[in-house]
Image (cartoon, rainbow, N blue to C red; front, side, top):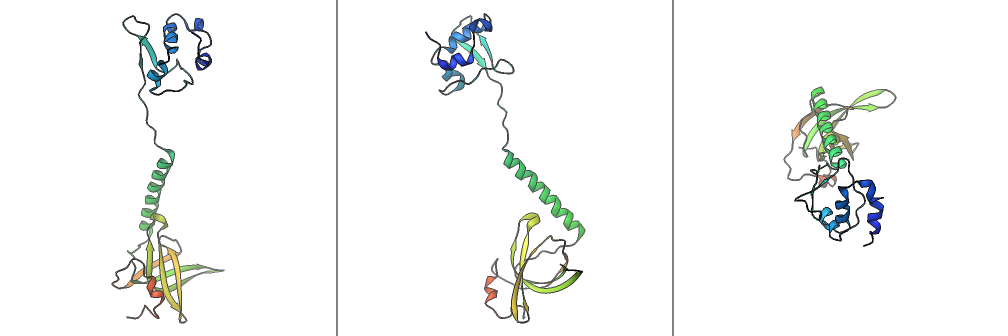
Length: 194
């Protein structure tokens, strides 16, 4: 019986394998051997003898090798592991910022007063009074959107909650709202009036 092409690429010469693996080589020539070893049909790419599965012959029969496979090690996907590490670092950074300064719970409908450092030629502190119309929770990248009137014109701005440019946030008033995003206030004239 001729040796299949895939078997020729695996084994160079049967004599170099010694006397015992010859029975394994004869079993490898059988058509159902590949199915019994790998669990599926398909060409065998390589057979390893170092740290690989050991073939032992039981009951003196040369036709049925008992192959013991090493336990399969399950590896986590690297993208999931990296995401988990980033979540841990994100939580640590948020805790560090909360230790440095007090950040109140800001929700839509709250009227707040902020002291913001404006980076110009000289860093000056600007005091803003505005209503929170939206909030986006994303760990360290959490932001909130405020709306205020400047010379009769409505101005909106988005600030990172944990920004080092925000020195202080005070909650002046808590309006009762039934929406998470208060974009309908864009059509109102002055939402800061009581």
